[in-house]
Length: 243
Image (cartoon, rainbow, N blue to C red; front, side, top):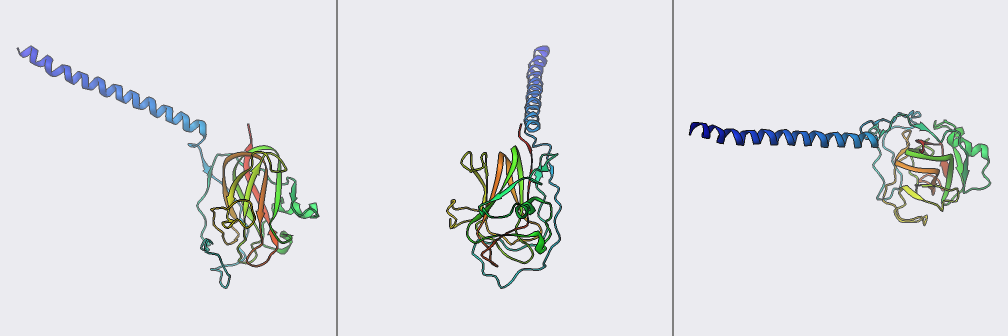
Protein backbone atom coordinates (compact mmCIF):
# COMPACT_ATOMS: atom_id res chain seq x y z
CA UNK A 1 0.00 0.00 0.00
CA UNK A 2 2.87 2.35 0.83
CA UNK A 3 4.49 1.49 -2.51
CA UNK A 4 1.28 2.26 -4.41
CA UNK A 5 1.04 5.61 -2.64
CA UNK A 6 4.55 6.57 -3.72
CA UNK A 7 3.86 5.60 -7.31
CA UNK A 8 0.67 7.65 -7.25
CA UNK A 9 2.66 10.72 -6.10
CA UNK A 10 5.67 10.23 -8.36
CA UNK A 11 3.78 9.67 -11.59
CA UNK A 12 2.04 13.10 -11.62
CA UNK A 13 5.31 14.77 -10.58
CA UNK A 14 7.19 13.17 -13.46
CA UNK A 15 4.43 14.20 -15.81
CA UNK A 16 4.74 17.81 -14.65
CA UNK A 17 8.50 17.77 -15.10
CA UNK A 18 8.24 16.31 -18.58
CA UNK A 19 5.58 18.85 -19.53
CA UNK A 20 7.74 21.70 -18.24
CA UNK A 21 10.71 20.48 -20.25
CA UNK A 22 8.55 20.19 -23.36
CA UNK A 23 7.23 23.71 -22.93
CA UNK A 24 10.71 25.08 -22.32
CA UNK A 25 12.02 23.42 -25.45
CA UNK A 26 9.03 24.68 -27.43
CA UNK A 27 9.58 28.21 -26.10
CA UNK A 28 13.28 28.13 -26.95
CA UNK A 29 12.49 26.88 -30.43
CA UNK A 30 9.98 29.70 -30.92
CA UNK A 31 12.49 32.27 -29.62
CA UNK A 32 15.07 30.92 -32.04
CA UNK A 33 12.61 31.25 -34.92
CA UNK A 34 11.76 34.82 -33.88
CA UNK A 35 15.45 35.73 -33.70
CA UNK A 36 16.02 34.22 -37.14
CA UNK A 37 13.19 36.36 -38.52
CA UNK A 38 14.64 39.49 -36.90
CA UNK A 39 18.09 38.71 -38.23
CA UNK A 40 16.68 38.13 -41.70
CA UNK A 41 14.82 41.43 -41.67
CA UNK A 42 17.74 43.31 -40.13
CA UNK A 43 15.55 44.65 -37.31
CA UNK A 44 17.93 43.32 -34.65
CA UNK A 45 20.96 45.01 -36.24
CA UNK A 46 19.95 48.64 -36.59
CA UNK A 47 22.27 51.57 -35.94
CA UNK A 48 21.70 55.35 -35.57
CA UNK A 49 21.84 57.20 -38.88
CA UNK A 50 24.91 59.43 -38.82
CA UNK A 51 24.22 62.91 -40.18
CA UNK A 52 26.43 65.96 -40.58
CA UNK A 53 24.30 69.05 -39.99
CA UNK A 54 25.11 72.57 -41.17
CA UNK A 55 25.47 75.54 -38.86
CA UNK A 56 22.29 77.09 -37.44
CA UNK A 57 21.38 80.46 -38.92
CA UNK A 58 19.04 81.70 -36.19
CA UNK A 59 18.08 81.01 -32.59
CA UNK A 60 14.86 81.15 -30.64
CA UNK A 61 11.23 80.79 -31.58
CA UNK A 62 10.33 82.66 -34.80
CA UNK A 63 7.75 85.43 -34.43
CA UNK A 64 5.53 87.56 -36.67
CA UNK A 65 4.91 84.77 -39.20
CA UNK A 66 1.39 83.98 -40.34
CA UNK A 67 0.97 80.22 -39.86
CA UNK A 68 -1.65 77.61 -40.67
CA UNK A 69 -3.24 75.55 -37.91
CA UNK A 70 -1.19 72.46 -38.78
CA UNK A 71 2.34 73.82 -38.39
CA UNK A 72 4.55 71.96 -35.93
CA UNK A 73 5.76 74.06 -33.00
CA UNK A 74 9.32 75.19 -33.58
CA UNK A 75 12.01 73.36 -31.62
CA UNK A 76 15.77 73.78 -31.65
CA UNK A 77 16.32 70.57 -29.67
CA UNK A 78 18.15 67.74 -31.47
CA UNK A 79 15.74 65.17 -32.84
CA UNK A 80 15.98 61.52 -31.75
CA UNK A 81 18.29 59.45 -33.96
CA UNK A 82 16.71 57.44 -36.76
CA UNK A 83 17.57 53.74 -36.56
CA UNK A 84 18.54 52.21 -39.91
CA UNK A 85 20.45 49.18 -41.24
CA UNK A 86 24.23 49.62 -41.05
CA UNK A 87 26.34 50.63 -44.02
CA UNK A 88 23.96 53.10 -45.67
CA UNK A 89 25.36 55.89 -47.83
CA UNK A 90 24.05 59.15 -49.24
CA UNK A 91 23.24 57.68 -52.66
CA UNK A 92 22.08 61.07 -54.01
CA UNK A 93 25.51 62.70 -53.77
CA UNK A 94 26.61 63.95 -57.19
CA UNK A 95 23.67 62.33 -59.01
CA UNK A 96 21.80 64.03 -61.92
CA UNK A 97 19.12 66.52 -60.87
CA UNK A 98 16.27 67.77 -63.06
CA UNK A 99 13.34 70.07 -62.33
CA UNK A 100 9.88 71.12 -63.40
CA UNK A 101 11.54 74.45 -64.22
CA UNK A 102 12.98 73.26 -67.51
CA UNK A 103 15.24 76.26 -68.18
CA UNK A 104 17.10 75.83 -64.89
CA UNK A 105 20.88 75.54 -65.53
CA UNK A 106 22.36 72.13 -64.71
CA UNK A 107 25.15 73.62 -62.63
CA UNK A 108 22.57 75.32 -60.42
CA UNK A 109 20.55 72.14 -59.93
CA UNK A 110 23.78 70.27 -59.13
CA UNK A 111 24.07 72.38 -55.95
CA UNK A 112 21.22 70.34 -54.47
CA UNK A 113 23.48 67.26 -54.23
CA UNK A 114 26.93 68.85 -53.85
CA UNK A 115 27.20 68.44 -50.06
CA UNK A 116 27.02 72.18 -49.28
CA UNK A 117 24.19 72.58 -46.74
CA UNK A 118 25.26 75.85 -45.15
CA UNK A 119 22.71 78.70 -44.87
CA UNK A 120 24.62 81.04 -47.19
CA UNK A 121 23.22 82.70 -50.30
CA UNK A 122 25.59 80.85 -52.63
CA UNK A 123 24.30 77.50 -51.33
CA UNK A 124 20.68 78.20 -52.27
CA UNK A 125 18.97 77.72 -55.62
CA UNK A 126 15.71 79.46 -56.53
CA UNK A 127 12.86 77.99 -58.56
CA UNK A 128 9.96 80.05 -59.89
CA UNK A 129 6.54 80.44 -58.23
CA UNK A 130 3.83 77.79 -58.01
CA UNK A 131 4.10 74.09 -57.30
CA UNK A 132 7.54 73.04 -58.53
CA UNK A 133 9.73 69.99 -58.05
CA UNK A 134 13.30 68.82 -58.20
CA UNK A 135 14.05 65.21 -59.13
CA UNK A 136 17.10 63.03 -58.45
CA UNK A 137 18.06 60.05 -60.61
CA UNK A 138 19.87 57.52 -58.41
CA UNK A 139 21.05 55.67 -61.51
CA UNK A 140 19.59 52.30 -60.53
CA UNK A 141 17.00 50.95 -58.07
CA UNK A 142 17.95 51.39 -54.42
CA UNK A 143 16.50 50.45 -51.06
CA UNK A 144 15.80 53.83 -49.44
CA UNK A 145 15.58 54.35 -45.69
CA UNK A 146 15.92 58.10 -45.11
CA UNK A 147 15.47 61.29 -47.13
CA UNK A 148 16.77 64.56 -45.69
CA UNK A 149 15.72 67.88 -47.23
CA UNK A 150 17.02 71.37 -46.57
CA UNK A 151 15.12 74.18 -48.21
CA UNK A 152 16.63 77.60 -47.62
CA UNK A 153 17.14 77.76 -43.84
CA UNK A 154 18.91 81.11 -43.66
CA UNK A 155 15.89 82.64 -41.90
CA UNK A 156 12.87 81.26 -40.06
CA UNK A 157 10.25 80.22 -42.60
CA UNK A 158 7.71 77.49 -43.33
CA UNK A 159 7.47 75.94 -46.79
CA UNK A 160 4.11 74.90 -48.20
CA UNK A 161 3.00 71.72 -49.99
CA UNK A 162 6.17 69.76 -49.29
CA UNK A 163 5.59 66.42 -51.00
CA UNK A 164 8.13 63.64 -51.52
CA UNK A 165 7.47 60.85 -53.98
CA UNK A 166 9.39 57.80 -55.24
CA UNK A 167 9.05 56.09 -58.61
CA UNK A 168 10.65 53.52 -60.90
CA UNK A 169 10.62 55.78 -63.97
CA UNK A 170 11.60 59.37 -64.73
CA UNK A 171 8.04 60.34 -65.75
CA UNK A 172 6.63 59.18 -62.41
CA UNK A 173 4.06 56.83 -63.87
CA UNK A 174 5.37 53.49 -62.60
CA UNK A 175 5.02 52.43 -58.97
CA UNK A 176 4.68 55.98 -57.64
CA UNK A 177 4.69 56.19 -53.85
CA UNK A 178 4.30 59.21 -51.58
CA UNK A 179 6.47 59.08 -48.45
CA UNK A 180 5.71 62.61 -47.17
CA UNK A 181 2.90 65.08 -47.88
CA UNK A 182 1.95 68.14 -45.82
CA UNK A 183 -0.39 69.61 -48.46
CA UNK A 184 -3.42 69.08 -46.25
CA UNK A 185 -5.78 71.13 -48.43
CA UNK A 186 -4.61 69.52 -51.70
CA UNK A 187 -3.77 72.90 -53.21
CA UNK A 188 -1.08 71.27 -55.39
CA UNK A 189 -3.57 68.65 -56.68
CA UNK A 190 -1.36 65.69 -55.80
CA UNK A 191 -3.65 64.39 -53.09
CA UNK A 192 -4.34 65.68 -49.60
CA UNK A 193 -1.57 64.87 -47.12
CA UNK A 194 -1.64 64.18 -43.41
CA UNK A 195 1.86 65.37 -42.46
CA UNK A 196 2.36 68.75 -40.83
CA UNK A 197 4.11 71.87 -42.05
CA UNK A 198 7.31 72.71 -40.21
CA UNK A 199 9.90 75.43 -39.68
CA UNK A 200 13.06 75.11 -41.73
CA UNK A 201 16.22 74.83 -39.64
CA UNK A 202 19.74 73.50 -39.91
CA UNK A 203 18.36 70.06 -38.96
CA UNK A 204 16.43 69.75 -42.24
CA UNK A 205 13.39 67.51 -42.58
CA UNK A 206 14.21 63.84 -42.05
CA UNK A 207 11.75 61.47 -43.74
CA UNK A 208 11.49 57.74 -43.11
CA UNK A 209 11.41 55.93 -46.48
CA UNK A 210 10.97 52.54 -44.76
CA UNK A 211 13.22 50.60 -47.14
CA UNK A 212 11.17 51.38 -50.26
CA UNK A 213 12.79 50.44 -53.55
CA UNK A 214 13.01 53.17 -56.18
CA UNK A 215 15.35 54.80 -58.68
CA UNK A 216 13.89 58.31 -58.74
CA UNK A 217 13.16 60.75 -55.90
CA UNK A 218 11.00 63.83 -56.52
CA UNK A 219 10.34 66.61 -53.98
CA UNK A 220 7.71 69.32 -54.41
CA UNK A 221 7.06 72.64 -52.71
CA UNK A 222 4.90 75.72 -53.27
CA UNK A 223 6.65 78.73 -51.79
CA UNK A 224 7.03 79.65 -48.15
CA UNK A 225 5.84 82.12 -45.54
CA UNK A 226 8.66 84.40 -46.71
CA UNK A 227 8.42 84.16 -50.51
CA UNK A 228 6.39 82.67 -53.35
CA UNK A 229 9.64 81.29 -54.80
CA UNK A 230 10.78 77.75 -54.14
CA UNK A 231 14.22 77.47 -52.56
CA UNK A 232 16.49 74.47 -52.03
CA UNK A 233 19.84 74.04 -50.35
CA UNK A 234 20.49 70.29 -50.24
CA UNK A 235 18.85 66.86 -50.46
CA UNK A 236 20.40 63.67 -49.10
CA UNK A 237 19.03 60.16 -49.70
CA UNK A 238 20.32 57.32 -47.54
CA UNK A 239 20.07 53.83 -48.93
CA UNK A 240 21.84 50.93 -50.60
CA UNK A 241 21.64 49.23 -54.00
CA UNK A 242 18.55 47.06 -54.31
CA UNK A 243 19.26 43.32 -54.52
